[in-house]
Image (tube, rainbow, N blue to C red):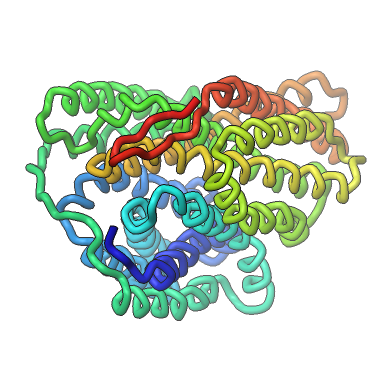
Length: 477
């Protein structure tokens, strides 16, 4: 196996990945501020997030093909350049349209960089060291979005929202320079034929589903909105046609042969359930802390920081444990911890102590760090090298879809629960009653997340360590 300067390669990819994911969530806390600055409605401001997710949903399915069309360096330079230009435009933005354009450029950069990062690790690390390397990616994927709102809260308090982007620029520049010096071309450029019909179906399919679910989770109409139903139905039909098209092609855009590998499927399902649990709790918990317990946005951000930070820092250690012991002894106890934390979360009230909520959040995030990267690495390990780009494309794309679905379902459960409670209340306008309604709705969301966790736990019983023998992978018993 060829020797690479893995430390420098990882450093450049992780710095750029961290900054990209940091700015993805950092802007969320500035949304209220931006509504005043640009004089826009909440629904319009929400596009800064929806547009970002939509770009990822459209671009990620194509990364399997792009990884075969362009060299590692070309894709790296393209993705980081897109992120830098997007960040600079965002920092200079003086109206909503300019900021929206910047968000799309930033998302395009991330949509290319994250699959490139996974694919590069699979190529430059031998299987017995991949867990630890993937753990560092876990640190970035978990910790960057978690620090975003807290750091942004401080910047908005003392400077202005523009500094969220000014802060990111020097780091992107450093990552780019390190990458230019040390990153080598690690994949073979085979240039498969580009099938425009596949590209169109994938764009309509994944774009429609991500957009439909994102929209369902934000509007007053929710699921009854004709736009939501039309885009989800169109998206699902396009996805079915996309799948049929891929199965009939000799050189598919997204090779669905990855689904012939049982551990890949188990790993994928566990990663998707983690994504749904993470995003549904990440959306509801800050809302509950602010509206149900009357804390400031900054205080809510600080409360969630210990759990998220610990999740990030433990990720590489979980990776090392995975390399040594395999997935089973991490994934099953991890899901049990998550289920227990969510069970306790489903009983919180405005009287619950802050310390208890912080402790539960820490338990939840530690449990997720035991599941996510071990399941993902084990799944990808079973694929033959020529399917690495497709495996990472499938995992990253479906994570976007699961995230959109998890968020939409969580918001719907919360809203329905609140409406039901206030409908039975004698004084629905009182602040205390609204807080109680928020509690009632949030408890149901945590129960939903717990059910997802228990389904994950049942699937985790089938996980087996993948052992590499002469280029072929076999699950060990």
